[in-house]
Image (cartoon, rainbow over all chains, first blue to last red; front, top):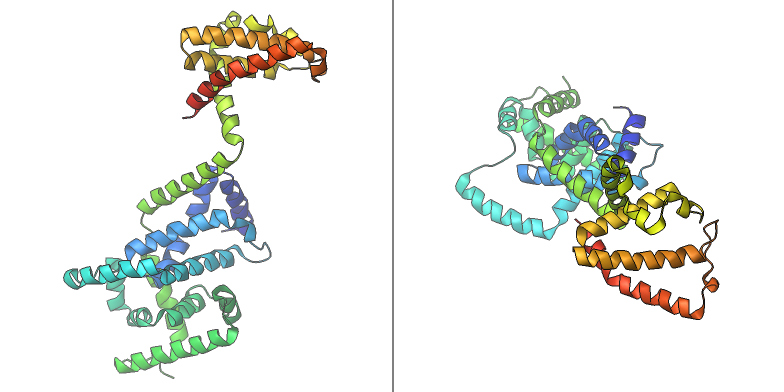
Length: 187
Length: 167
């Protein structure tokens, strides 16, 4: 996706141009969806958050800094909304109810495809088991290829904190690989 | 293979398998519409769109029955309004307003409304010079009183028309 094009579409969409809205959606929805789905596991919640990301895109367009890449801004919004979602207490109440339901119905995690991948991709299933704070760093670093400084910017935390979380995440992953018997990645 | 490289590889593969559900588009679009409508409601756009629709609705039939202009009853012809600084568009707008009124009011109400509007417009024409500038001081005290009465008699009609005009 080209930033210039996207920005002009976004501007038009903000003014109510539906075809521009469609173009923005087409260009960004997979990326937004996947980013959220890496961080949040419930299908309904993922969709709620994706929807909110788009609402937020129209509303906060004026805060976009044209000197930075579009995706950086987009990922900033996405991660912020995921974090908002984690913070909201009413969601916790919903979570509580869901957990109660889940004990009867077993799992209602994301996609079947993801479950299957978890079996095939051991490392990915270990990433999913990391705490959110560590996982978000791993996803931004290895899925989106951001530098640690950029991650600090997106998460609005000090670089030192990002570094230590990154270090901790990698340590944790290596440890768990060892525990499961695989030693291919241990150095 | 290093763990970093393996991570990149696996995340990419898993991401490729995660497809955004197509039905989500409908939902996001709905929210977008809501956003767009909210925004429009706050701006004068809504009024303009309504006026535009009314004008278009009038222009189509009036192109066929060119002589059936309601506004012609009031002004005689477009040239009257043009002599007072108005334009063809203003004329169409007034026509649109009249047509809207005709649609919203009962027959008797419309007759009364038309009569009042006619008087009001006579006053307006009198006080407006060829550049469209108003000179209310041109009216005598008696005329001014009459003018105000007209305005207050018309107010309920306007209210009714505008209220019904909203979808």
